[in-house]
Amino acid sequence: MKNLFTWKNLGWVFTAVVTLMLGMTAIGKLTSSEELVKSFEMMKLLPYMKWIGVAEFLGIALLIYPRTSIYGAVLISCLMSGAVSLHLALMGGASLMVPIMFGVLAWSAHCLRAYTK
Image 1: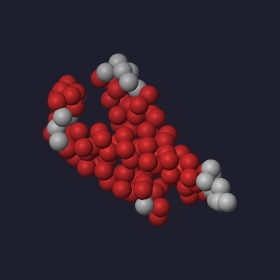
Image 2: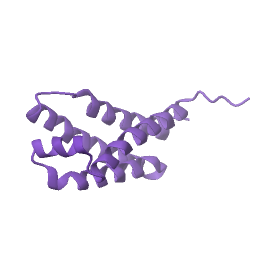
Image 3: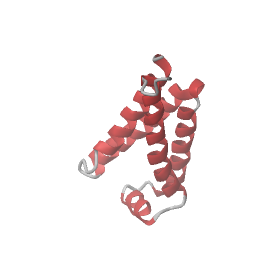
Image 4: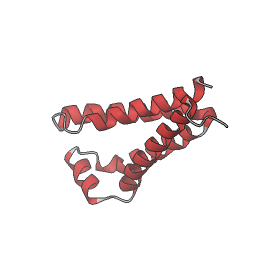
């Protein structure tokens, strides 16, 4: 019987988590959900909201495809480090762990899938 509990499969689980969670936020940005519009207006970034959503979708797509997963991890971690800096500068550190978690999960997903058997 084949062992399903491998490090590589854990990497795919992390990829699925990042894809689902970031996909939902990207859809919210592209459809201009009320909560996100208020947040982006407060940060004076409303004109860039859709572009950030597109960049999140691109990062997800790159992370899913094994040959480009490192580029997806880099793009997602860049987006999330920008989110961390904005949360610190403009929101007083509110909900800081969410973007940190996404960045760590994206890199963990790439490393587990690419460097384990």
